[in-house]
Length: 453
Ligand code: AMP
Image (cartoon, rainbow, N blue to C red):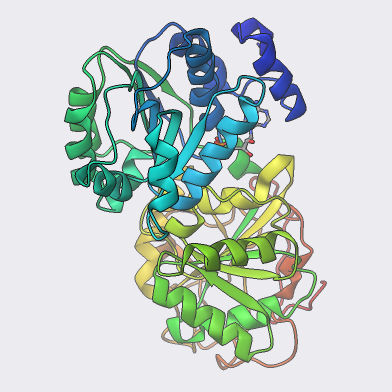
């Protein structure tokens, strides 16, 4: 059943704005959540970025606020949206402004790392929609610049991320200040115990809407894993990125330092790359993002948190320099390359210590990730994955069981770990679903593939 936005009973000015955004049909979370939210229900949304969850909450909030035109009290807001990162805060506010462009409601954004003066000014005479990160909001509240008495709807976005980032204490301090009479929404991609407990204190008889983790997105992405020793990862990355056919690559590291090191290493190899992470100033992050978006930088190195919610079209490759220890993060990461219906390629480096993460990822995504050969394999006898037995299969369905069962020929073929020649592994630049899951049409590959094999 494909609904239209008009069937969701959204008012004409909102529909006009959606038309301008080229949204034709509601996404599943929008179709499921919007009617309940328009009716004033609380909501538990189990969904991640990329599902259209922002519009799922923004549209009904806009509609309800515009139907009930009361001014917000001074220093207060009528709708409060808390989200973990500045990038997300900016994007959410941008969405409210875009969808609400014909409604004349006022939206403001608050986050740390910039001067607070303009934020305090924006709040002073009251605001319809405030999107904030918890730390700065709490800080302004403690200084007496914020009141919550006007809040009629509260959204906690990316609750699991808030937990990861240590914001739950801030949330627990903010929530009791909110008026008891309010509509509350909580969105989370996963449901750790702590979030479950929070639900009890936050939501009243919530409607639960769950959209499965972007399985369709994952399906469109050609996923590969490259087993490689930690010490060879940088050389492998430089070799892959030496292939100019990789037009726009987002490289993920687990830590901020890692992101810097990888970007610097690439620069030394003559590959222009920028890093974004939480230690960078807001303006440096925005600049790096802008360069990447406009194609001035071909490679952006990011941590999960910094990349959260970043919505850039045309990313051809996601490269996991390190695997995330949370499987859902893997889905988030690789989903960056399949925006707007495009296919994409995701390559994950996996060293010995990361094999457990890989297993967890395969469990959550319910698919095996095909192993790709390259010239930087560990020397025989200390294979990155300790596989033994038979040669790898590249057809996407060729390895059974866990990764311990992977083949890794002893004394074999896989070079000296230093490799040579150009564009090692570069075949991935052009490959599009040559060997898909279940396709069975893969072929064995050489160990030092040609750039455009
Ligand atoms: P979100 O999950 O909220 O981060 O949204 C992911 C992306 O989907 C954003 O780029 C939105 O602009 C886009 N989007 C949201 N809803 C729709 C829709 N109904 N049709 C097309 N694109 C949408």
